[in-house]
Length: 302
Image 1: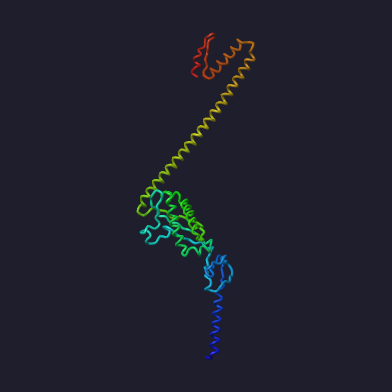
Image 2 (image 1 turned 120 degrees about the horizontal axis):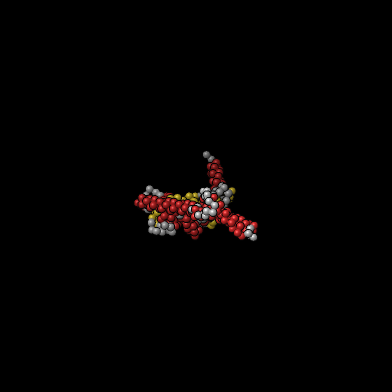
């Protein structure tokens, strides 16, 4: 093999290597991705977004590619229990009434500030997990055991989210929290049966209270219905009594007007009509001899 051929081969190889090295200056960024570039120790602003970008060859730049549309999940507490977590006490938190509760939560987040995400932390899940454990401990300390286990789990999630968001913002982690959900809350294994009995008693008390309220509402409705019925009956009777009294008064005035000049005959007529009505109510016939007096006591029974 001749020396010129070897020289040309080496030159070709070096040229290819140089082209390959210079090609490292090119970077293709896909949709939903950004690249944070640190050039000679300085951060290039803004980060590279989707498209083809030209920078400096490898060695002059350090590039970190991130997906900003990816929703990341981080379990904390009992949600990330290991085989030895029950022994180590992971996931146990002290409540406001000094009880222990085993709580697990799922944190969903994504990158919203790529530069801060790259520069301000090396192991983001470890940092975020430690902050979340501390925030969950602080949140549980604000609620009593019954609230943590059943009554106010959503409020516990909201308190955890607010505390964790403040901590992430203070450290400029470049993380945007999407949601924090408490997925599990239970008493320690040693006292599960006692808590079950207590919850059964609370449920029975609530059931009895609900039944009492329902019964009270039923009694109140029935009493209201009876009162309305009595009121309607009294109103009807009042109208009837008023109408009857008005009719009798009008009849009396009519008779008085017809016989205003003949007082003895008017008295005789009224007397006879009163006797007629009395005997009609009595339902009997009374036969009298001419001039025989009438015992009016027979009309008093009716």
